[in-house]
Image 1 (cartoon, chains in turn cyan, yellow):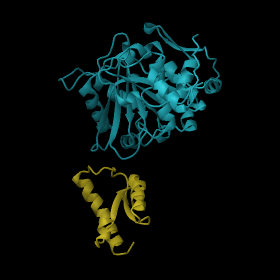
Image 2 (cartoon, chains in turn purple, yellow):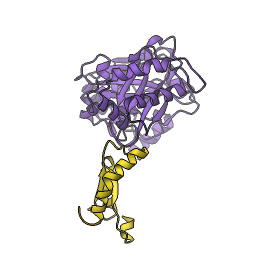
Image 3 (cartoon, one colour):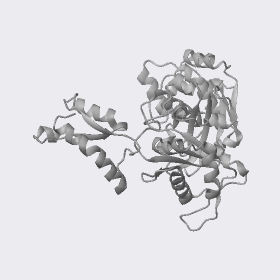
Image 4 (cartoon, chains in turn purple, green):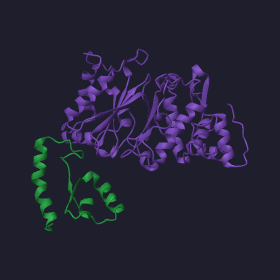
Length: 327
Length: 73
């Protein structure tokens, strides 16, 4: 493995300025990845530094645990966050996570890190009001750690292998938890085959985020029809490499979730309602087919706070949403 | 609160989901004990309500507003 060179600095400011100069940050200051901190992170995850978390063959990149730990320290993570970061890195570097494409694309695709299981509450991962935005250390730094790995290990550097025309603020960090306590809904990681007590991370690369607002529907079908029309306004082309396993993530907001609870709709009920309607043939340029191979490819996640009659659609880039257990 | 300060008896109606925010505004405005009437579900927090929903809500809230303004509550 490649061991990072060690540098000595006279002050924190000098270190930060040098990291800016070397292009090792996302444009924001970082925490110093001292050998002691990196070792503490590795110990917390029970990993040796040379453990391989994943590769990007097209870039001849191998990501080790030591590299991930250094970037997690830089992102501002606490040691106890690191096992979750490791799961996110593994998920993103899964072959069908398609790192090379989703971090290099002109479209500026972002990576949503969705956390399930007991670790959410142990780390204080926000899943309610404001969960997409700033103010929550676990959300901010776990998402940032993945993005720093993409930059510093996977060479996703703007103007180099990151060819985004605009990119997106979601590329600084985009991490939130599922609000598993909001209902009896089966959590995302359980739907994907893991035990409820198993903590897990799902990484979904998204081409764009679309807010599906609906303040007027007063029942589950009305909300679903709004989700369908908003997804179909954008369309999902599908991809032969991904086959029938493609995904779209629907983050169901508090106000919409209420109607599903009141009428006893499960996630499976929503998937069965949406799937044929999404896959119906296009009728116009603004009513396009959203090609999702199977109902289970529609990933339903409960999150967000009260007030807005809105849900969010995380429309996919060329990748599968990959779920990895947090060990 | 501004109406109250201008000498116009008034009462604010807020949704239960917004109670915390309303109390925070009252606190920073120097009226921590300001009282509210609250609306809860099935009325959604953002008031894009049908005419029927508005009328139903008005029937429920009007007596409460009257009581609050006349010191009956």
